[in-house]
Image (cartoon, rainbow, N blue to C red; front, side):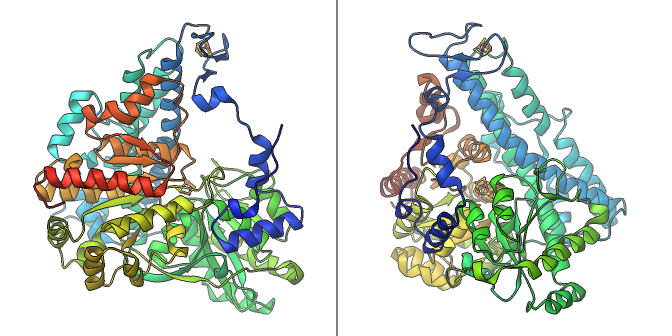
Length: 625
Ligand code: XCC
Ligand code: SF4
């Protein structure tokens, strides 16, 4: 029987969210919370990962009573296959996003678009150098073309490894080679996982898990990293800047346009169009003071990092943002966009506009967004938003709070610059123990967990212990709303972190970008390991996704572990139906790759686990605890 939705106070830690859940309920609008209640309890087999639908001799459910599927597959095989495909879905999402950036670079190189350009030329040349492309005395566009070809080839089948493995310490690469874990080509690993998990192929759970790790590595060091790096090349490498966050960023007297999804290729153009005088003038004609572009989820993070646009919210705020009644349009690209946004938009004057042929929404206004026609299409989209302002019902508008300030824009380049040109001061701060270690807190919200309670709770516990925190994805807005993304947040940090961040004028929690930008954290870890002459698994670092929900978060977690980073999840993936797979994930991987997952729902205990790990790693490096 379906349960009643939980009381509002149990759903979220935020007042802006509570106010909008209440407004939604009063207006008869169903959100994720009501739907979760209706879907609860979930199927036990699916939760354990022991259901298989990979062929029509099934579907099969593996249990103690019936330990084998029709074909003979046991729980280990079924769970490993399901988990493998789950991770692969995530790797495909990030990487296909990365490919879209290569295609924009291609359009630039081939002169098909003037709407996009190479903004950070120095970074393009640096990248080319890193993957072995000659740059001396060559035309920028020649180098760009060769880089584009190199990255396209990283998706294929002809390479022994993806090109940005040039960043990985040799010991780590040797480890991967010995395990058959070296990512060769992004699409290759993804396709091979689909093959392996077909009936009658890889029927050895640990072997399937190894390939899952390889596929995840192809995401982290391949697809995602290419996505991040080319986004910087095309739109500029982020530098520190101030912005604001929460639903209070919506403006009662402005046209409010929210961008949602992941790919800056669309949202950057929308922002540019929204700044054009003709469109602003039209907004004024209709009685608005201007056009306000705000971000949701990761495309919001991308624009926040580079352009400083305000953040309306993270995953569980996307429906609630529309319920303010103040949003003229929500413009989406792909990933993490709840289909319900179309219905909720329909309850207001809000226009729901989708822009990707691979992510269409029934009932949405569709644009087939292309580099060639980007700016023209962006103008049309913004114009739709502006015209919708005339239909706004002021009686239904409720913007529940004032925005809070945040600081953003911490690319590795920006951090190195803040440190005076090299990582050495950071290494020294780690060596002295002022910064005892670092943990990346990344990922989502999940309606099963009180929104942002763990994301914020863990960040606060870690900085108290002089552990630097890097945030990406939906943890960003959480940290921002909690005041952690401001230099003043050093008052919540331990004495060492307070000293270091205070002297640099930076927050103890650094915003490192979108989920794809977790590649920046990988790169930082590799650079630190390089600086110390050790493996990534020797570093006093960790990763966490406390409130994760998506296949992409699982891919991120697995590439972190496979890269040697001890990784926390607030709740387990659907693998508990296999002891073999579960034990591998939470202990067995340690011997193979020098790191494991650990599952812990309590943020205080999680911080203690990280503390123990960091102590051990510091000891291993001969550093004081
Ligand atoms: Fe999606 Fe990236 Fe998760 Fe947020 S954090 S809910 S994956 S938007 Ni990536
Ligand atoms: Fe059942 Fe095997 Fe087919 Fe899966 S592959 S549905 S376990 S028969």
